[in-house]
Image (tube, helix red, strand yellow):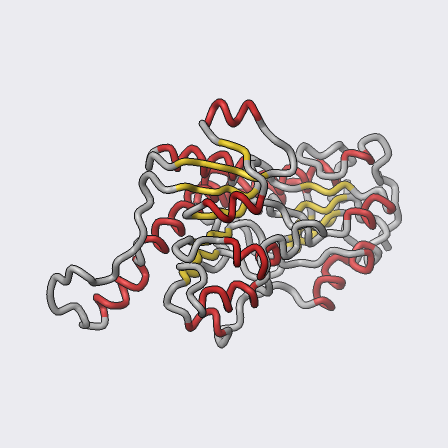
Length: 335
């Protein structure tokens, strides 16, 4: 029996590749950079499934490169890189990797918060450069985290995990979300606030909303102007949730104290971007889920989705359940 054919758009942790290879005829994009548009379309051609990354734009043109494409398995929780409407039209199952990176991403968000507040990156550069001459009572003064007010924008799984970590620092936690969560409020001692109030009263603001049409540039010039001049913004969600140009101006003019960023409007960020010249911003290259255990589990979940889809079974982690009983199945001619 011929194995289903799949295209994996980047090298993944080996346990997942081994799992896929047992069930599928697999081709893997071998380079560290994502496949080009043409290479992506060519890679999908004739395949039953694709395992994509958030760097791969999977739209109707890509889907139509293979008439027998049954499943798109995204190696991420977010799936704003996939045209879900186009997948639904073609009855293609779409999967993601929910839950697995929650705690790991929350860890990074809090690490960025601490590093920015206490100016750790600046201090590291200062020490390595030989500028440290003596103990100085005014050297690299930062912001206290303990007993400060943390505003969490988006109180889903990751936002709530950040709130748990804040409790260890005796922080007051307030949150904004499209829906109030009174159970989580009781569990975590958090208080709901409208966005403007949260921005105006928080010492730290941590963003944890998905990227949608309504959340793009949710934090712009007006919102940044509401924040305290001593406040710090942390973003480990999606870059376009924050107007990066407005953030640069706010940081440059010291209208807010700092920012810790794992995501950017355009990734990778241009090394000549003026944001990178500022000393009050800590940056990371989108590593929110980057622990060995988490990335491996993500890969295995993506492999499970991929294999179930090409075998014409409902995938375990589906983002388009509206086609649960009507998904594209076997017997399609891929030649």
